[in-house]
Image 1 (tube, helix red, strand yellow):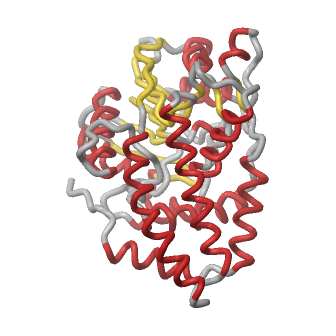
Image 2 (image 1 turned 135 degrees about the vertical axis):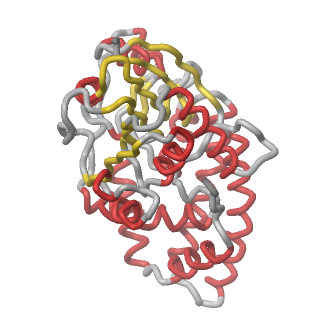
Length: 338
């Protein structure tokens, strides 16, 4: 499979579309982001030690999420993360895209699938990861995602079977038969779980005996102290930047697999900080351009404010990862018993 990096034309298109966003649209984006991601549920190490149960995410409406993702996708395309996830830094000398490719090879190996096997991408976005996993394994790709606009892009991809990609909510019963998949994976969507056990039991239900379930998502680490105001600020800025919803200590993820009938094979966190540093360097240059255009009154006032907020939050995210308060890449591999 030939991976297409974000091109100059892609970035110019995203830049053009950002220039057309009105102040009202930016205000709506900011307000929706604050409503959905300020004071989102979290469970820390202290909660885990005290036996506090998981708090699920309060999911926004499809319209709210679609409004968010429209602008987020433009910002991601302006950078290097059109696939809309930040990979772990596996090779710091390589680009974000190359590290996504390296990471997806790890996922493909973890899934233990081959020609003709059925594999589901839970929260599949536009289907770019599903396309790569299918190319690596010769498996038959399926995907489900809440945002119809992203599924429509998957439908337009000639390398993906259109009928296998579905608009749906993984917080509801999954629209698949029992024991119908050989493997399931989820790359950074599970932060939106409203009822963890329900969704994990649904994945267990649709997997064949012996099937693999691989997840990679945000997790709180040992050092995070909710009582520390500075820690809370760094996490909140990271949440606004990466639009993750719930934020849960990694041991909750490990226990969840075992509670819902899986055998946990491996569980490890990886840092993405060197990848986000590459993006920050790029967006620092963009911010200067946006500021100049705002002074010339070429762009709406709030578009520049959007870039400033993104850059400030990026620096907070770097500090949060460097201080090991969180990772966006807690990686678990589990199996449904044969």
